[in-house]
Image (cartoon, rainbow, N blue to C red; front, side, top):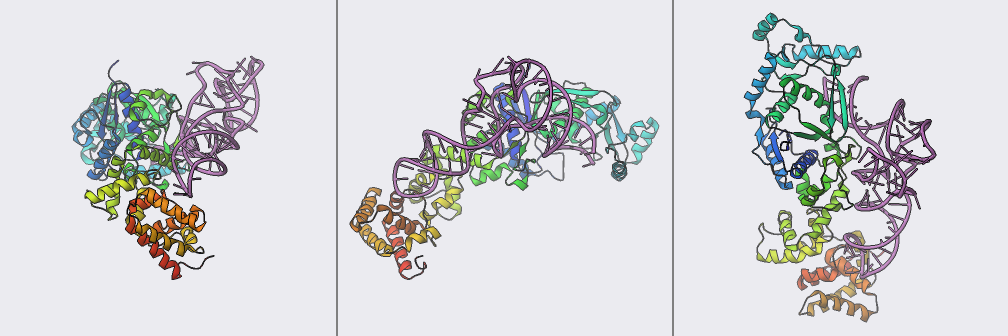
Length: 484
RNA sequence: GGCCCCGUCGUCUAGCUCGGCCUAGGACACCGGCCUUUCAAGCCGGAGAUCACGGGUUCAAAUCCCGUCGGGGCCA
């Protein structure tokens, strides 16, 4: 048994789609598991739509996920000679033929067939041209090269995830091998390359099933051994149709930008169509490799459930050492103008105090911006729920007194702050919560968030006292509205 | 329209190959409790799938066979 070689072959006509990322992951896992090679081929034969920035997005996306390829990237645009040579071979063997029908003619005939209720397929008229006719037309008209599909029989193959799949040859038409501009069409380039690259297993999306019989015929015509196929279930949107931009973010880089961790993305993606033997779902790449088995992949489509991704991301976020998390937060906070990137010493120290207080609550790095907002900006307004606490009877007086006592503190640690708050509550004979809630409202503008005493200790005496007094002024000035 | 694929809780899925251990297991989401100054997190508990439907085969079917329906993909 020769070495396993797999590949992914994205076209740089758009950013890396999460579906492709999932396909890449399964290919990579399969390669690692079988100690084979994982290769990357860029299918950039569409000159109009291929863009260097998309190629960059694909490359950096794979790197971000940790899915490194084992040999230099193969570019289709640099192998035109190879396709030409193989096309000529097929032509010489009579397994391909030039077709002179123009797109307009084809379109007209297609419509006519549709009108008569027939499946629109190429009518093969150029297949029956004589050698003399061909030689004449070749000089006069542009042409494409078509595959001379066998008219009878069927193609059968064993799909690793689906079992036997068969197609009747009569359903297949004489598809285009080489376009009129001399560039190879998808199926042709794909087969030539896969063979040339020594690909042993093709793991790709289910949407390629119908390409497989055509490709199988090509392998046969070219006289080479086809690889084994495994068609992975499609990634679906919430309406069970193929995941597309209608469903929200589809490109990997969008998830990266919102602050999804690569380990969470990889773990989540691995669970779409595959499941570990045990019941442990949270696992790192190494563990996934150890457990991965292609024959365990399920054939049915899987909905991309953002909620579960967010949960998993939150899980990984909470496991990060404070230092690492803080580092990752820098670009997000810097964008808000809260610090420099890289931060100076003070900004760094402060960030290290803020980070653990938001870590428990965030599901993405991006969410930290909202969660940490009051650490960096004085609240400009208060949540409606916070206002309710502030406008309660006697709260202004309570908060003013608290501000005075806090001001006298020399040590503004969370323990001192807590003692001060609780003592005031006890003296006034109210429950601690009656002081705590309005204080939180005044200091953060919200009703929920990290432990109040810790958060105040991080903010420091000056800011806390200032915010308390500002709230007192607003309450007394009636700016917050009357008590309900 | 033709061909192909798929069909277990709302979602991801275990179980299906080798029928009985399945009164169908886990995870996310949901609901409740504990903890607690709040929200999260964490822990505990709950609800949620007559295994798409209908027929067979069998002592016994989610699991095997046939059919139907539904959804999706590809080709344009």
